[in-house]
Image (tube, rainbow over all chains, first blue to last red):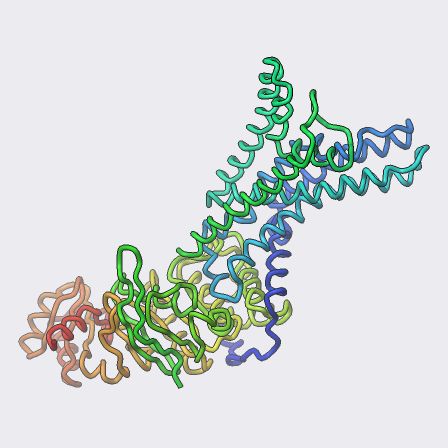
Length: 285
Length: 302
């Protein structure tokens, strides 16, 4: 405890910024946290290696377009093909956004400031949504730029690319609200990771099984609904309904109409309600 | 001007009444809020921060209504919680800068203020290391720094000396006194030990089971309750006997003795008794008196 620094206490009379500023600062801070920026090196390994894996098909696709004048896959199916990687990213990173503040009871330090609980949760959801969107939309965009540069015969698939980016935004909101709601239910990071990945595996495993069971017993119409259990296929169904893109499922077809989109909205609303209830309880402690 | 004005404040939880028609005011300076565990101290602070609705009554902080102007209050006050509230994987600097920004400070101002307050609370080079490796004393300093970083008009310190060793306790109390005087920031500090607050407070409020027991300037307290704590390596019993022979009022308190101060002669008696018995005196301290004594006194008066 050196005394040479002691120049007395100085008051602060500079600007004090409003809520928009604090919420934005919290969102940026959380987004940096998702990618491990400003954290030790080991926090960066998982998000950046998964982001690198997401780029892998992009590199292969551009190479194929340049060398054999052929696309590897379509833009609209990218999220479905890469769903395991996206789900692992969600599972591994959403607990880092919410668990430490709950586990170490940091929340009172925020709530004793002008930050409200709604702004806090909103900033966290926004940060995770932006992270998921970047994970999906950046590779799509790089692939599209490559597509334009290679200049294959025929018009560029601009419409499909834009549709895929819009759907990436929808998918990001859906996944991040569900992921954060699951992760916020347990203050332990490991359990958060496990619960998100379990829900994903169950939904992925259950969809084809239920489909097969219903299809083989002749309930073809009911079987179509089974695919919507998995969030990636659910959003793919919305995309197919809106833009008429290919249905990226092993067999059968999605039910049409507005119902898949309504399910997406209902799931987002339910996840937000769970988050609100969880944080109302945490704030009262 | 009143920093705090509380009128008929009642807070009922489903099973307990935490505050029961509490009416009290506090002026600028350092105010101690004393009460046993569960007396309602932490509940009162949460209400004053505008974070907890009340059942009845009203409270104003810095002239702002705690129920309708909570956000404005939280802009002007700092809060150091009683419990552990620090994430272990970030450094003190990062945390305090971040929380300064959460109070609305721009990025560069947040950095400057964080460096300033961390220096004032006595965290040197270690402020760049993750908090997980800090001692309890260092963690308490970080908690205090985050409450000060936005230069509040008033800070609420909830049991700041909890878990500290005697030296850490003394340093924390000195720091609190400096905040109230040198820094010019009003302080509301809670403790379950009246004795330690006596050294730093201008005014003390005692509550028990959510009710006001007493609110008075410190001088009135010390007149009524002055005592010293004496600790010897061994032979406490012999010392107690000798002091009693010398006409002092002695009561054992764990390994220490509590001696009532009659005047300067009490100190002389302790010195002489220890010297005569050839005892090793390791602590002679003013007024670490337990809150129970005030309660007993109050009960006797009723």
